[in-house]
Image 1 (tube, one colour):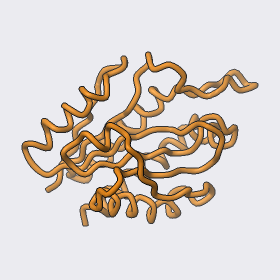
Image 2 (cartoon, helix red, strand yellow):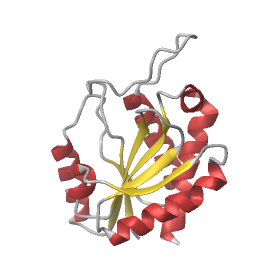
Image 3 (tube, helix red, strand yellow):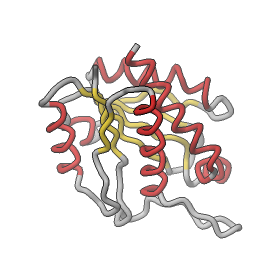
Length: 183
């Protein structure tokens, strides 16, 4: 069976990577959000008997080269799939999934995540499957995708990202998509 590698990109030292402070005083810190979604998704996968490894247990920044090295250490021992989990920013709403240009298997896996979006997050726009030259996608030896789940600088998206219900649904989307890939 394929081992699932979950990457919770960014640590607490990454500049930016946070929402504005909202009028109610709340603020999303992406490193905390990413770790929460990874932990919830990992629990769901383990409960389903799916082998999973979390690449980063530390709260501080782990350089991309080290995160890729960790993924490649697992990939060298067998079939793996890497999912790097993020929240987006930059003005927008909804979610999108990235794969490395020309990586056909990763692109197919991204499509499965896209197909599952509407079942779990129907009130938010799915912005599509896209290609990008991100190091975590380019420098790993296994198929890899990167999810950008909602925009932390959008008030409605961020309210959902901050909520326990929202996080549970986002984790369920990740877990259900992975289960669909493994079918």
